[in-house]
Length: 262
Image (cartoon, rainbow, N blue to C red; front, side, top):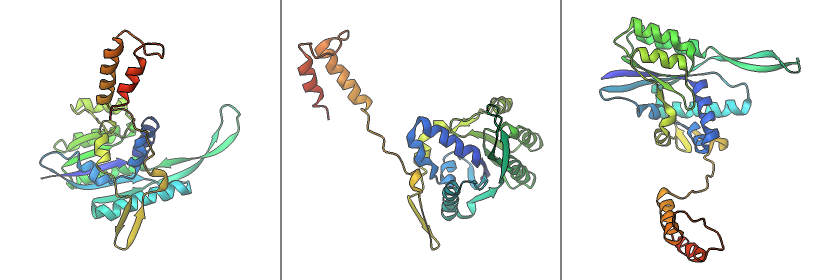
């Protein structure tokens, strides 16, 4: 069996999910993800998922840091040694506003791309891995990809874009190796099938999904089957060119019939 390691740019991955959530609110629940189980869905025949490395940095905001810690600890509890977090740092940074010319303080995440590169290239050089799954949309990782493919041509490398993120530079690079990047936004069902339980307990430790990450209520919408049924009834009463309005003699019959749809 070919040994597979996954190297995740956690900052990229999280912000991809946040971006996806703005368009599809149900992505909010995918923050509470069994990360090993999720990437296990992408393992090919003849492969085995050996390890997932999750590269991140402790958030400077206390509430976000607590949620981040809960996710990482939950994955530690569920997956044991198959999951390992590697921390970078957040640095304070003073920025000059181009409009008001005043200074303000922000934070910048550092070391993640360097750590991803170092661990991936170390494992390849030490023959610790047969196939690499790299999760990022950061074009700064172009050189590590090129060096890995040049120095270890027998090692398979697949690139995964976090939801709603991509890189033209990385896409062009991967096409040279005839390997199109995989867009995780297109694998919503794999996310849904890989959620952690709301409460994770092991070794005397209990962790719960952060309240803010629980799935939002989404009002039900008619299924395609119901929509087609309504259209069939509409056509029967009005014809395809008619508009529904309360003055039409068949309007009451139309309303009566569609209210019977289960």
